[in-house]
Image (tube, rainbow, N blue to C red; front, side):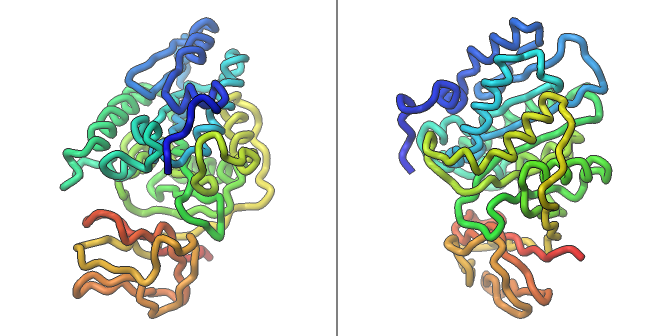
Amino acid sequence: MSAPSSGALPEAVRALAEADFGAVAQRFRDAGFVVGLPASGILTVKSSTPDPARASVLVSVGVHGDETGPIEMVAHLVEALSQSPAALAVDLMLCVGNIDAIRLGKRFVDADLNRMFRAQRGSLAGTFEAGRADVLIEATRAFFDGRGPARWHFDLHTAIRPSHYPMFAIVPELIADAARERLIAWLGEAGIQAIIMNPESAGTYSYFTSEHLGAAGSTVELGKVGVLGQNDLSQFAAASSALGRLLRGEPAQPAHEAPHVFDTAQSIIKLSDAFSMTVGRETWNFTALKKGDVIASDGETVYTVQHDEELVVFPNPDVRVGLRAGIMVVRTA
């Protein structure tokens, strides 16, 4: 994917894609908020009078540089909010994850940033994205430090392949029950059709904030990858409205339809360069396989379907050795 032409973009979209918070930051500052720019691509907006009951919300976009739809959606949402800054009812952190990859119109520079939010990085430790993850981790810890218990993190993505559920989310199982229920309700309000409960970390940003910082975090997949400035923003309408209501402290709206919830049956890990999958990058997310079907093989290791039916999500045989090459999920009762 080629880099977008900034000249054709709405100003708010150009600014966010380039991590230029100048105008938005100034409007919030003029309205009396405590505004911070702790690192490139990060904006924090906090109340001048700390309140433990005030929610803290982290919204991240562009963790993958070619996933541009959420950048456009959030740019318009934050621009509108900054024009009426008194309406902001939460402490907000806005993060543009991989600015360099966005500029290049690529998914990443050296390696997948959304596998770097863990202590053990192996051969990825010296990559550009490992350094960027360290910056994000430090700023995120500082943002949530001393905040009250109402903590949210929405890491907004788009999928690189079609999906039988175009809008879906990954939710860490370790989130406390009450917070997880509120998160799932919000996801339904945001038009999310399917939710995958994730029992273990794959190094993602949202799992990190859930595990280490007490946030109700979720990786939210909003449709399919598109070119910056050319996304159909109507597909993000429900998510944009739900996020706007949360940031303004407005009452939640009921979901049009409750999301389907899936448990993770198994993670497919690429153990060596001998790894091969019977499904590839072109396979739609949530494609069903039957019991006994071979999913992948890796030397003497063979991954097969263990339940009557398992659905494959994120199949990608081209990941680096040691990383997850797919998730197999099952419908909950």
